[in-house]
Image (tube, rainbow, N blue to C red; front, side, top):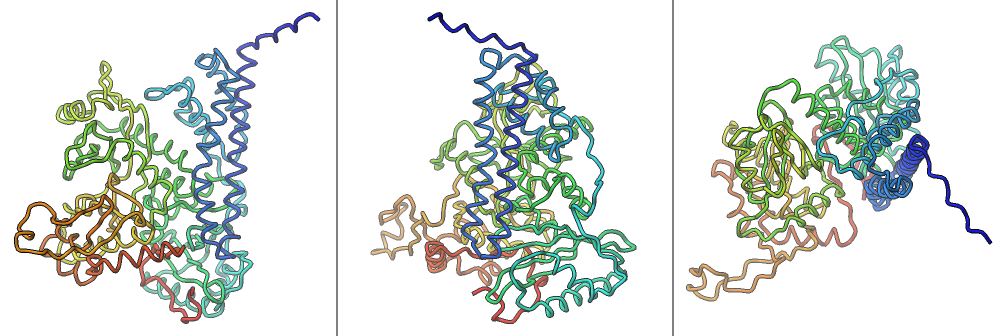
Length: 586
């Protein structure tokens, strides 16, 4: 039997066409599964299946990398010895652009293509030949508003409109106190409008609820003569059904819902860019990147974040400089003085007493990405092979980078290449804030500092290093934590009382007179290591002395071990509606 002749070698154009379709198919698989997981959110909320909701959130976070890994392998197999042929990739990009031109998620599709190319080429900087550096298309206008939101014209009174809005949520669970909720919402809106000396003639409400944790959030906007006013109703599940827990009516409160320190929403939407534009209309100071990230499109949010940085560099002549605050022992941080992002990279070596390794730090950043951040952990975006002009760096910064992070930072001619870094929102270090704040602001901050430690604890995070320099203050004066090298699960800690000394000599000893295991933690010692100024120490002790008692920590561990998911409300107590005790969750 004669041997089978070899298959003819595909032309470059044919190969580019097949590979582009392979990437497009991978993106379609990603979108389908993303939507399938997101669709489960209403079911989880109605059934109060909070553990199922967390499992869904984790699966969705892992989904992008899983699909990209598979597509990279398939494309490499298909391209063979031409996988690094840029002419083939340029043709692939052109074919792919045509395939996604009519797609509802075309901007996400461009980012997906970039993820494949960067994995195969490990491009330094950007390469417009094989990447979508700028979008190929302009954002289309919203052609069918009804697909995104429902409009309520205030021909009727507020009292008649609010029940319509709540009933349109489409939940399959009854409201515990529907009439009373409607009455209270109407009263809150009337008081707000009266205080603002304005009226509302129209309300737009996004058709889909935004699910996260134990909450479902209705997001809308009110049209007043003074402009748009945000509206958010927070729905929770209680003992007797759904109830409205809070009414949010100001930009700051609604912005905090979409914070860079919170887990991502699960919300069904046909065209993500339409929803982003809707949210931007009520939160004009919120970055497009942050809105995409908050909706679960973190990879495209990362793309938008990088574009923001590049566009800013084109418009500004400012140089990167060492960021304000005390120097870290593990991370090096630099920033532009006229831009609200910081770039953080890992030092080559950590000074004693740090025993953390580079891989430990990377692992902790990954843990934060997958964890319920409770509004207290900054979401950092990981970047590789960033490239900037050398003149963009102050001499002091560049000298220090090459001294302490030579494994990560190299100078190539007139360019500086950063092999790996994290980019995140810039906040004011808490120690600096306290030095500059008045007495009232300082006391508010230190109360929220203690609450931050507690919020992290009930989400199974022990901060480790509680020095004030490791915490930051956002523009909403919320405290967040950003030093991840000593983070660990709370359930892995062994909280102990400090042993009594057996003799006077023991008390004077520079070394402990008792055995300390690696995971041993002594809450009684926390106050010594927090570095609280004397001016705010009494306030801290008044509100958070329980943090210095082993009982708080052990009881929190017991609650976590029992499988309890503890509610952390992302809004102030003053925004909540009074509810009968038998309405609240058991």
